[in-house]
Length: 167
View 1 (tube, rainbow, N blue to C red):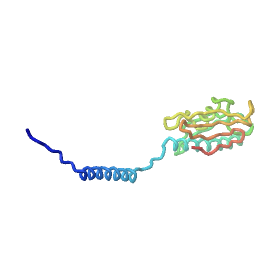
View 2 (view 1 turned 90 degrees about the vertical axis):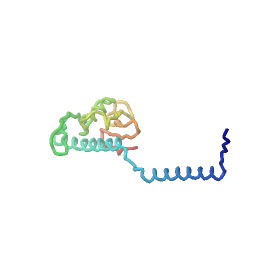
View 3 (view 1 turned 30 degrees about the horizontal axis):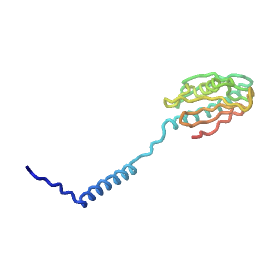
View 4 (view 1 turned 60 degrees about the vertical axis):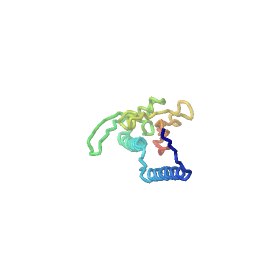
């Protein structure tokens, strides 16, 4: 029978532990240095849709002013090359701003009329909610468009005001 002895000195164990700790620290530093901060594409797409929404609120108001008095306009959507891609009827209030029924569905219709796309951004649903300070008053309500991540903006049809996106 062969007699084997396990020669493990305390210095050898400390050295192995030190090498493992140095390796772990170096790996952590390298991950931190080479990590690129990628922007949230969904929030960027929501920003783009909100900008389109805001631009079309203004352009529909000026179109209403030219055609005044009318309760409905036909908003024509163009691509970046200037080619017509869509036409949507948009209901206008007495102040000349896009509006709809005082419901969540009404807010959805405002979005689809102005953005000319369903309530989706980058594959995620945009929630359209109706809010009111008092019941059945067209001057004290707003639509909130939000993502499930928490980003949202508000649209006030009485004044045509669109808030900046809150994250």
